[in-house]
Length: 457
Image (cartoon, rainbow, N blue to C red; front, top):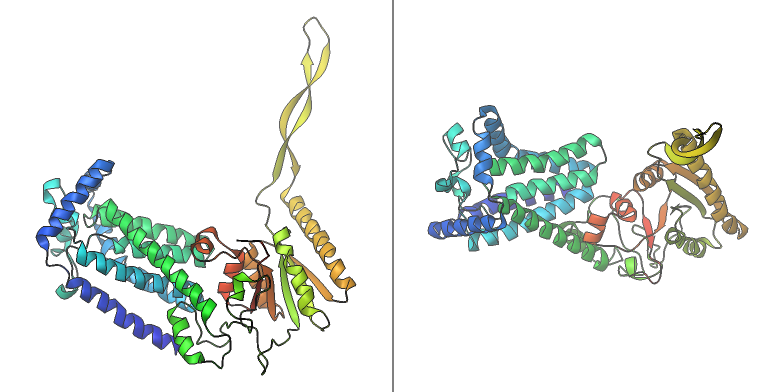
């Protein structure tokens, strides 16, 4: 159901975007005036380097042909491949990227219609050369004329969308090869759009800003959907399902997240929030979980979840797993320590002096054992008062990236619910600053209850 809806949405939105863009190209004289203004601005800023850079690469035919190929075939095929990969393996990132694309595309159409700009390849008086025309005999290969807008230079969504695809790949995977490709795609695209004389540097800046605004709006819409959709599945689930899907929350698949009976606003506003995905009884109450995974990182913030755990499981047969994930030591620890050194005294005799030298005091293996022992001692300390109150406690320790280890543990063990503390970040704060709670939440691996301590703003 959701896949068919995605195909229909993209099949309608993408041709419509190019069709509307193709009809906004009539004010040619104004487009050249705007191009002159943009070039003057770049000169004022000292960044009008496009013509000089192109002149440097023109003697190298193979390089020019490669740049032409990247420009023509490294845009839509790459975005399509990334979209398919994200849809099937990283659905939350796909939904955000899709909405950011659609919103930034709408912003781009408004700018194209109101502020047409001639691309550098038309400004031959500045020394630009249309390299794609030179190689293929046409400026656009296999692109119908009614989809073309020769004066849609600002913003460069050619660069902006590839940048967005790169960011989505980076956020979705920690694989070095994937992240290297995520960095390569926008850099190669920037080189291609500039050195083929299709865009100015400021076009690329405008494209990046446009997709950033699109991503910010997409994040805000998703947060609003998570806050305000009905908590009870019986209150119009299907209608809200479509709204949630369009808002960037996947709800058609089984096990999709739902808000609990205390209402969506409790997610980040109350000290104890309701679990996302917590099953409900017929009277709207919260059903009990058998095994709860509680994540701790050793900080006072993470420990704010413990009183809420006690409150939730008191008088029940629920068992609690305390999970401590510690960062893996990256390298051997070396410290500077005083080392005795012989020193010759003028007039005969000898004495000892000291010299500060780097000395290896802990190997990587020793550091790992130390971290594990510290984690074990920490977990025992936090489990002791809970056990004293009759709560069944297990403990587990892991080394690695916190979010990935939490997700992996929850996926491979018998866990019904994850409980953890959060700073309560949302929107751009969660996207750019990063959030362990945010990544676990977006994974959808298990229902999650987020506790936001009192006093955090």
